[in-house]
Image (tube, rainbow, N blue to C red; front, side, top):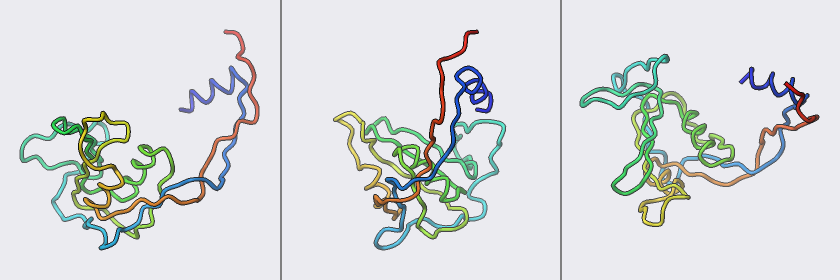
Length: 167
């Protein structure tokens, strides 16, 4: 990323800054009845190797701690997210990327979470895909709720840009 930024600054004379503005966000809260997420149980996972990507698990192999493992269920064309030993912040970052707007954690859940499995249908899924939306899945499967709200959103402001210089 720093190399790309340097290239853009050099070739396009690009100047930018970040600002925080009021915008559309989601707040992640405990649903009625409370969260179904539980604190990490000792021995539920093994330390993740930061130098290698997650691999499919062998039978009876413990999953890596702190890794969100996305997947797909081809039988009913749904998406899945599995994790164990991950903080709630990792889930909120993933939801932010999926939904295209910031997700703020208002659950009050601290520490690492025990194993959870989330299965949902993407909004842009084929018409024959069956299953609940991410909003419904969070509520039914994890006891969490996403609510639309207004809040701080970081934006990138372009101050100056020129036509590119020649090579």
